Image 1 (tube, rainbow, N blue to C red):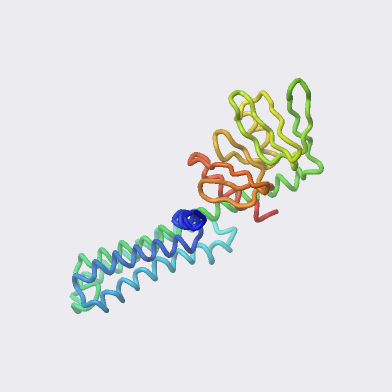
Image 2: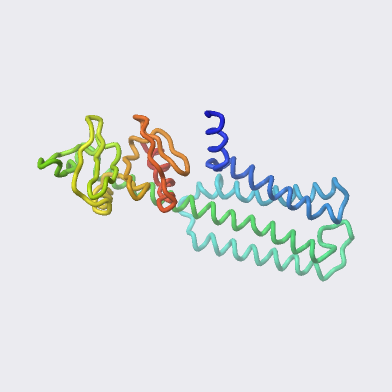
Length: 261
């Protein structure tokens, strides 16, 4: 069962290298299959490898190079991507006006279009990678500013009504919340407390404390998270919390918060 769980987790492509390996093999096999109809086995493989290397290379640049330029404006970035892509189209169009040797990739227009399409896709991957990084950075800085301004020792306690009593819970003691009909369970190290409250209201009230919603029935405290994948979160006490597709976008925010703590 452990082996099956590991295999299933790997297939989710949670890490950068898993995604690169998956898309790299897919792109390499597709390009190789295409060029194999025109060239011998080894030249076709080299052309396919060149295309794959360019696309994956640009993707890695997006992650490891541009990610360091925090103040690089998004509009300026996309403008350069657009202009460079147009330049590549113009160069290929100019090349097609001249008859090149048969062994080149530009001898037949169909092959040129294939080459241009797949290499231009690199800049789409690049832009996507950079945009994701920029969004994550903004979320991280926003959370950092909130926590600096409202550090746990200076935050007001979470006030709830439970079983006719008014309770004051310390934010750092609450690991997660779970909806139970019209009630919400607040889970702490000393047990859970049930309050008559709606999840939407609880989500709004707990946002300044850094709590994040991961499911229509769950809100978690990132400081209590041990690990997470694309569809579940494991807390330090062993509790497993589901992550729905609606709130999967919050996983990046959780990842950035954990890196800060």
